[in-house]
Image (cartoon, rainbow, N blue to C red; front, side, top):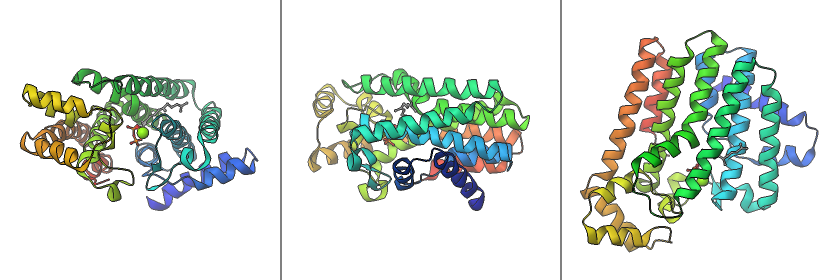
Length: 301
Ligand code: FPP
Ligand code: MG
């Protein structure tokens, strides 16, 4: 599978190279590669065909664009352990690079069946709405689990759901089953991401640890923590929201998350969604796709 994902990488290079702009090519080459989860998923669902490599490349371009914009919005300094493009080149270049990758992805998407193109386009609308919801929810402490879940569905899972469904359509497989697999996987993925922010070191994450809460994000471990605290501790937690945390405050939060089992509860929630996704794929005899879920849940960064 390794060399197959490299074909997707080459296809992305080719798409960006066809724009014949040196600055764009250089900035694109400087971007760190991610896990390419979405590309691997397309290839595993739709097989190793020219059309699936192209679809995978389009999705990864759109995903890369969304992260460039996200880093501007979040004022991030790092992405995948390296200095982020907004930090090294400034917001204007990061926004324009995002626009270019996003538009090029859409240009290439028009060569697919209308139903596939519409599915992906709609998911990108949802992911943008999800990002806006994330920003708005970050304005104050949010103890509401339903709005958190809706936000992460839109921000992260909608594109993974559409990717899986579109790949199934390419392969003549059941788009509903594969779409639901992608949705469950995507929500579980974001919950695990939110847990790792609390449990892992900055070195391992490639970005500052416990930064979500400082950014104002009330993620699932914080919601469960809030639910199990007394009134005094709830007030103390809320008073720390959206501010830089010192080591004592981080230890206080981590310690209480331990005793109240808030991280475990959040993990269990992700696990259950993951198990549903695994069961769906076992029903289709798709062991490799079930394994993607296992690897994602067990990951450490
Ligand atoms: C990461 O969230 C962000 C996303 C998964 C989606 C962001 C979407 C947009 C900015 C809209 C995209 C618009 C276009 C035109 C493509 P995070 O901040 O929780 O994760 P992080 O820790 O990786 O930054
Ligand atoms: Mg971010």
